[in-house]
Image 1 (cartoon, rainbow, N blue to C red):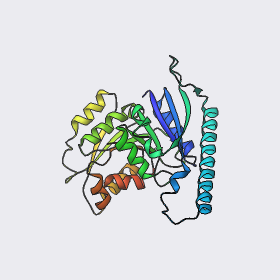
Image 2: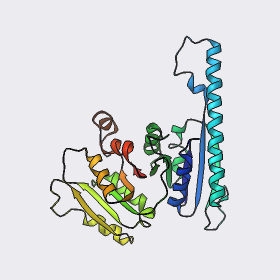
Image 3: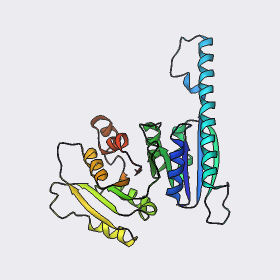
Image 4: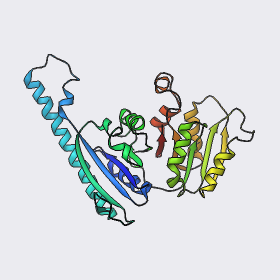
Amino acid sequence: MAVVLAVLTGSDDDASVLDHAAVALGGGHIQVRHVRRDPREAIPLVGEGLSPDLVQRMLDEAAHDSDRRSARARAAFDDWRERSGVAIRSVPNGTAAPTAEWIETTGRVEDIGPTFGRLADLIVLAAPGSDGDQGTIEAALFGSGRPVLLVPRGMPVTTGDAAVFWNGSAEAARAVGAALPILARCGMVHILRIGADPDVEAPEPELTAYLAWHGISAAVRTLAPDYREPGEALLEEAGRLGATLVVMGAYTHSRMRQMILGGVTRHVLGHAPVPILLTH
């Protein structure tokens, strides 16, 4: 990975996002972006019938919140840069030393995926449940075509084992390929799948062989279906195995179906206690 996009929101999640972006990169360039929300976006949501004074007060409050978040995001970046010693650059310098740059724009954070995110090797965002927004995450996944790493609030940077949630889909295969630079630094990769009979030999020898060609040790574990949701069962097994990263394809069924009926992606987004690397 040569370019990682780290999205800061001006929340307590920003420090974890920056730390994990640096570790995922392993050397290269981190583009740190903060998108200031346009205060005028607050007005169409409340409809008509508001007095001019109330509209102005709402605009002022939204602008104040935008300023506060911007200041917090920049402070988090400056503190992280001081701790890490990363040099500030906006163009390549021909060396292997990691670099970073700060970019602030005004608009909608949901637009990051379809614009800047397409020119990054990885997008790092806060996970939902902290200050992360699932709409923003889905916009990054569907709009950028790039892998997305979601970081829970306060999650320390650790390099241990990883869990790959595997169902043989194209999305899952893309996730494995995108995660290779990170998986290569993990201890063991546990390939977890839901199958009818856990005693039957798992049909994923090609995946373990593929990872072995990349110098990555992996083993397949098949879980029998039970009363739990598949996402719940997979997360519990990943936790039991001590995985510090989950890799999976996102929305291998349609997004509408998952919104109505639920699914592995939605469960993992809402409950994973460790970073998740997803692709669609």
